Image (cartoon, rainbow, N blue to C red; front, side):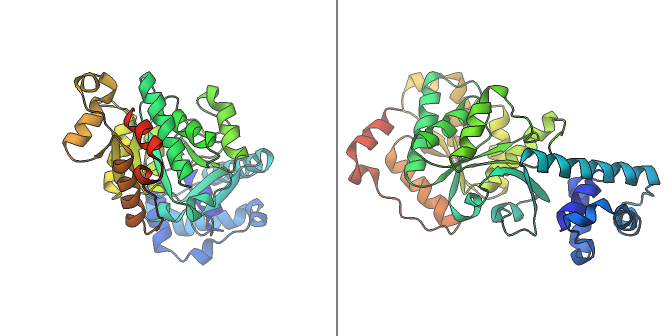
Length: 332
C-alpha cells in the first residue's frame, strides 16, 4: 500500500507532508504499492528513495538517511501492532472521504476504534476554549447531547474544557464521538482524559491522529490537528472562545474548507461582558458564524450542514416535538 512508502518518505530529510503529497500526485502509485511483508526489504525503499524522491527534492540521500528512515518506519509498524493502533492511507476504503478533499490533506492516519463512523454518519465538531465558564461546560455538554440524540457524530480534540464537555455530552446519550489528537495514540494528552479516550473507543467511537506512536508533539501539531477536526466535520459549533486561541485556528480552517460555522450566543449585557465569549461575539458580528441560542437556530444550522455535505437527514423540530427541549436550550 502507498501508506508504507509515504511513512518511509516522511522520515527522509528535506521531506514534509506537502512535498510528499506533490510527489505522490505526480507518480504512478502502483510503483510504490507495498504490502506489509515488503516493508522489511530495504532494497525496494532504497530504489524509490534514489530514483523517485531524490530527483523531486533535488537532494541526494545517503545510505544512512535511507537506513534511518527505513528503521523508523519499521518501529512505527511494530508499535502499531503491539498497541492495537491501525494505520491507513488515502487508498484505503476506510479513509475518511471528507479529509481527502481538504487543502493540505493528510497522507495517512492512525486510529483506534471504529473509523467507519467518519464516512457513514454525519459529523459536527463541538469545540472551544480549554478554560470555559461553568455555563460553557453546561452548553458544551448540551450540544453534545442534542447531536447524539439526532444520531450525529460529535467531533472534538479531546482537550480539557469545551471539547471534553462535547464528548461527554455525546456519550451520556449513547452517541458516538471522534477525538482528533495532536500526538501519537500511544499517549493520551491531556493525561487526565485517559479514561475518556478509552470510553470513546469502548462506546463505538474513534481516536484519530495524523502522527505515529512515539511522535514527539510540537505546538504546530495542535494547529495541524485543528484542520482535521473541521475537515472531518460538516460544520463546527463554537461553545466559548476568546478572540485569540486554538479555537480560532479551527474556525479559520473551517472557512477555508467551506464548512458551516455556528457559535453559542445569548442575549443580554451579562453574556456580552464575559471574556471567554468575546470570540463568539466577534464571529457572529462579522457574520463568520451564525448565532446558536435556541433549538430553532440549532436545527437550522444542522440542516445546512447536512445539505452542504449532501448528507440528507431529517432533523425534527424540537419546538414541535419536544417543548421542554426548546426551553432547556433557551436557558444556555
